[in-house]
Image (cartoon, rainbow, N blue to C red; front, side, top):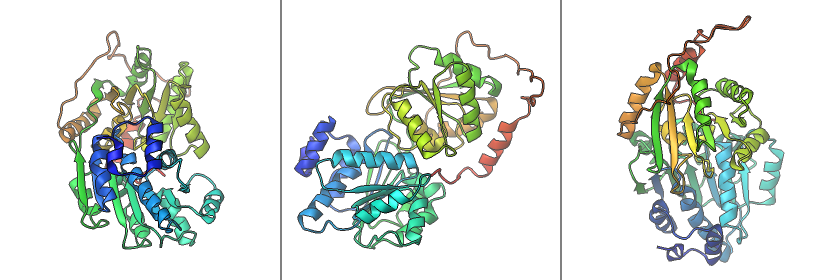
Length: 413
């Protein structure tokens, strides 16, 4: 069906047409009518399938109706997201789809001075997109009034609830009107998290596109079994292969991202890094340079794994294999978006084979194993240079043990 069949406002349809979208994706076709009917909703769909538009479009339609009735006053919608980058991206989507509407939007997140955010709120906004930490801080200082609120959206709901945000969300929800519409969207949604989510929803409808734990069908996946000390060399060899044009490389820890970035720069690879210790300006610049094709490789921790939309990522490389299977699904969902073909490569040392087994059980499929022709998988650990600590000292083992003891760390804001 075309978007016009939903009954959306003409100005919204005009913006959709300007964006070049002709027909809704399956999750949009299933979710938008239910949202427009006023139901609470739990929506599950593979990453890259257009979930943001599935809640933004009917939300904007509702705001248009409020304006027509003279009720477009105060904060009418709140969207919570786990990371700054995703919050900024959602705001950009709202402005694109609402470019012909008198809707004012503000983004609230940490990592930047709060003065501009408070100033925007004082001027008057209708939609706030926020990460929980900064939002709670402003709520605690009575900088926000959510009494006019009609709609609450939790984007990437599994991460919001399953990685340390549940108490923050409970505190935020306690300040909201009880009569509201609540929407939850995610690419993965376990039964346990679903049970928790229902605490915030009233008689929710369920939309599920595909299997709950499956990566996108457009992503070709494979595994390279490689010793830890050879991962740098293997990555460098792969980056020289045809087709590795825009490569997103995931590591577990910030210091690992720093080391890998320095290694690639020494090898004359155009690379940037993105993790929570970078300033907000540095993070935005790294993302923009990657989107614009100014760099070939972006090395990142999992703050980029959820919801970030980057066109034409040719490859996702799991340089460090993820501890949680859900993180794998979200990581590789950064490629193969909008029906394009993508590639996901995972480096798996022997000590991570148990994590690979867990993943394959989770997604219900075996991943093919590959070997790069001509690469020496038996090369010894290099000897340390004078004054350098021995590479045999297994710092990676120590950090991995810490992760396994506490796999559900608080999401990065």
